[in-house]
Length: 139
Image (cartoon, rainbow, N blue to C red; front, side, top):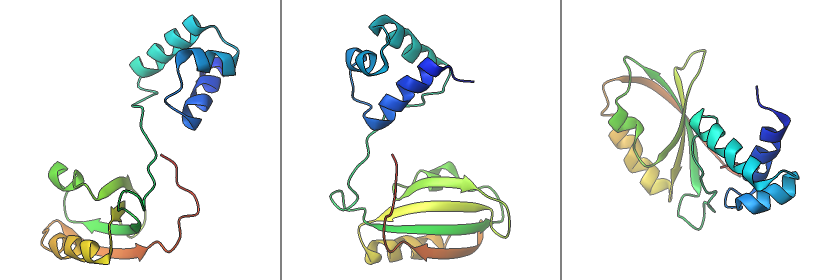
């Protein structure tokens, strides 16, 4: 369970992970040394997995967003899951095994991905849903 101090630090980092230790200390009313030690602890324990950036999908040519439900015969290879267009993968319950969040430049790029996907013998069935508007997305 996270302490109140850790929660404050994480809250600041969620807004801007580039903030300096000194800025985080000011915003959380903690000493810089405390912030530094707690950040080290949070990283070591795997609570903070990595510091990342939220990009503008349109600016980086990833504005065509697709959700793909997948039923598999067997586990999908790491090579497949590391495909650059696959941004997130969730194991789910129900009729499908996985939910993939994919991002593409346009429908043509998605179509090429889909044609290639159909060659994968471990995929039994898919259901595709294309996003029409991005209401909220976090990094």
